[in-house]
Image 1 (cartoon, helix red, strand yellow):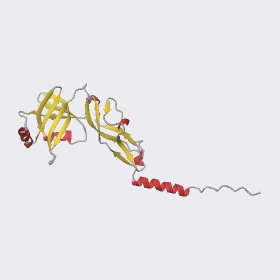
Image 2: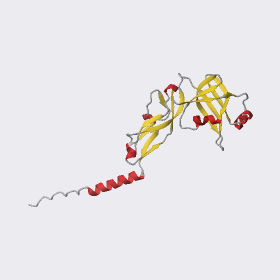
Image 3: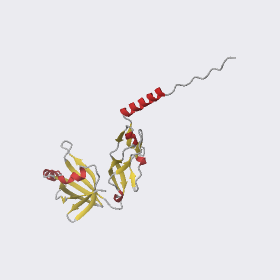
Image 4: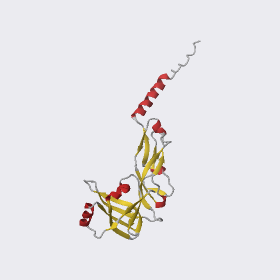
Length: 209
């Protein structure tokens, strides 16, 4: 999966007053935990652009002095009014320990249903999956070329080596819906076919003797 680096500095003090002072300077209070560790630090708010403000899920190499941690974002908090980034939690990942992530869904190709006038509907933009970090792809890629109108790809249809899809198997991820134009065209074709069909020939009546 895609990776990005982030530099952090340890926090000398932990508390609301210190956090407010950091935010006033354009910094974001953060915490990283895992492997029995829990470290409080801060990072430049501008450096989160390629981490949080993107549809991609990324592996974050967190650099703190001479130490580097392989992490993923576990939770991010935003101000309910200004929508400014307030706090970020990072989780240290291990190569041999499964992790749970939300991966974006990307479709490949143009479906037969869309060519016939239907509309492709991606119902789930991200899927929750579990597996080793080495098995995590950049995205869940779904080939929709053979998908017809009225058909869908469900969570249970998705098979990726080394990954477990953490959704009910019957939940629809992407589908092709019939549009009004397609429905009207189908109705018109049905009417035209009926109008041009040859009339049934009445059965001959046997002659009276």
